[in-house]
Image (cartoon, rainbow, N blue to C red; front, side):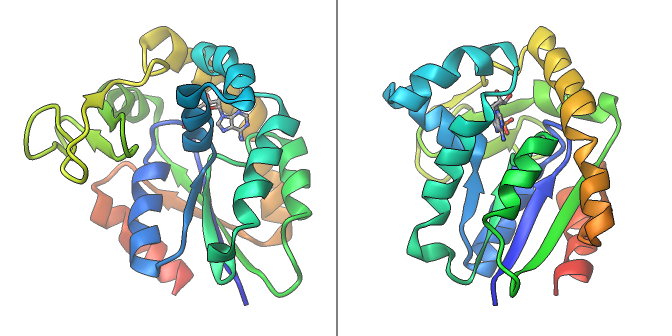
Length: 213
Ligand code: AMP
């Protein structure tokens, strides 16, 4: 039986940070669609080239492109006992596409991390990521041991090109208009769990453990 966790919520609420911790603890892969796309942009793969402009502007990359990336990743053997998805689905069409990936025996948890716009903007502005391994830091809440350097791999910490005030605003709008309506879809299925995610990481994790274990 596969346990599948879908990290849901607005940009910057902590889906990647929490997803990475759960992934390590559960020995289950974290599949971040944003990371897969950023890798593609970095390597200038066909998909990366097609996605780059949408990402820079904070717009959604076309569904078929992201779904292809996601299914290719899920088809690897390490997902046999389950996986954690971060960043998918982001609209109703993608939620319908994801249904094709699930099988009857799967247990599915959609964890809806909730927080106000103020908290999200503060987190995104202070976010830094490792350009080499993608690890996520927050300058105040989760600072690296050495300024500008990743604790895990020694790579340089950078600000994402889409973590600028103008693009953040766009991404929040996309979340409200396209992504948030998906909640209803999962509520009807009985898979939806809401988590108050404005607190510190352990506080968010505590609520999640009560649901998934
Ligand atoms: P994220 O790292 O999840 O914040 O995603 C960064 C950017 O990648 C988004 O603003 C989109 O441009 C693109 N992206 C990530 N996931 C998806 C998705 N499921 N559908 C379409 N675009 C996506």
